[in-house]
Image 1 (tube, rainbow, N blue to C red):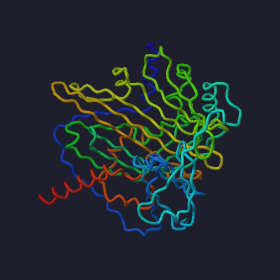
Image 2: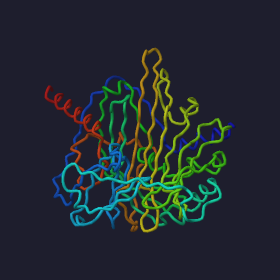
Image 3: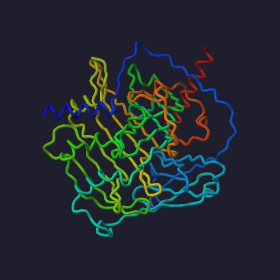
Image 4: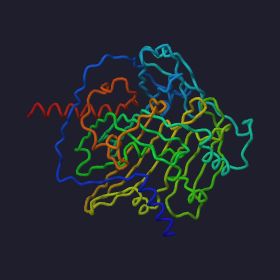
Length: 436
């Protein structure tokens, strides 16, 4: 068992899903270094709207919008809202909107002109018996096939992907910090054992240190923490050869995505497993046996073991342990090949100070979406340009200017609560400057 625990802790150390807790010497003075952006000629159009369920009218978070015939895409936020920036030369294109378990909708971009645009998606579901292809003999075999077929159905060429990355920290339900970045990812073929590289293009942040008190939470790994959720490229962090036999797999009700039949497989560790392991659902294309989405959690009931996995540094007077570790990864299909499209990680921690009456709860959410990509034409990142897997994004960014300052880069629309928090901090900074 000791050997098993050491293996797990080593895996998570490399996974870089580690929190860094640092006590500041006193209340920090908060200052902005605003970006001085050059005035550029706008060569793109912006389209805004909301994707909702056609019957319930509930917003659909993490829905994907892709400009047809291109690699340009974006993701809806937790309120179903999107902002899509498209070059003016593509204004006559159509876009496809997809969401797990719903029928794909294709509409002209011109339909998105106007205010309060809503895109309605219809739910699509079917029984497993309705899938008219060879059914695998059991769920275990199907998952094994999905992991083994990455060289057949996933990208086989080196690619340069543009991605939008965001980290948010909340103290209880109030936003305390926001960091965002546009990065380029040098992606190795899925069959390659080489790790991907990441180059930082632009970054910005906004932090309310009053809400963080004297405790600063930082995620080590930044964009890597989101990228490593790609269980096809990096299976060692969830379905390693040593761990795979410790799971039990079973079929759930099948569904549909992008008008394709999809098997749904539930997985959880066997009852005799005492170390923290994952549980959740895998969505596997019924025709190719390719993984198209995974939504899962880490069992954090064993507080001591779970804390060792995530907490890298903390004050002696503080007890910290995770209460939730939730993950999501979505893949996209382009010209018959699947590739990583979006991932989301949410970590919730309880922080207990010795001698204090009340405890604090902090939630850190990180997400990354691929917004464009192209084949690698021989250009690679220099060592100086490449981010380290141990990077802390908030240390690389400063200031938070107008949300439009990224020009044509596609981003995920901020939730209203985040926008309100940033506006409030900006107003506070303006008042502080006026009193100097």
